[in-house]
Image (cartoon, rainbow, N blue to C red; front, side, top):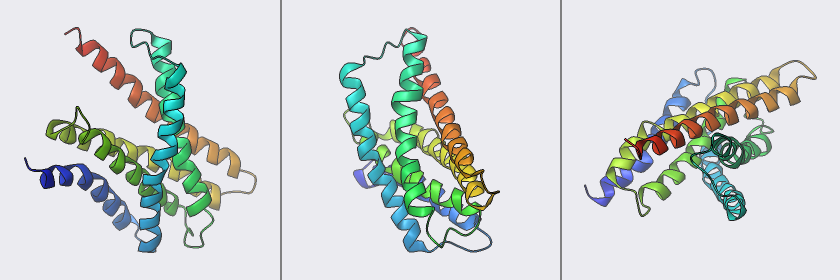
Length: 201
């Protein structure tokens, strides 16, 4: 498997999901320039997330044998950090834009940001020291679509917030962030538990 094929396996899933969501927007397609910017902002959101996570890990040591330690790491250190920074760009870049003019747009922009994040994260993992073809295939069917699901749920609530009843906006924003964090944290939690148990099989 040459490097070009490995890059395609790593980058392709995120772009494919982004295109799928784009074509699901039946009524008024979003400007491609804004979608590309959203994708790139998703890439950028990975950097502050990594800095915060590394700061946590500088004084917090994960104990894979302890339920509370794994839960804290999964939901707060990883999920809350990553979903918060994705939410920041959704809220302050896409949300105020005049092109964001229907509830489904929340899903479109949230998924674009999520796919930018997931694609760049994929590159880091797959081309890291323990990466490779097998990891690219596994993440194609796990981590990348998972980030799309987190984005769909966050974007659904943010879209409702913009076009819902007066006074419901903040609670709907928080519902979107909370739902994404819970799903992301649950994904991390069970993945860490599965990897820990695999050591004893």
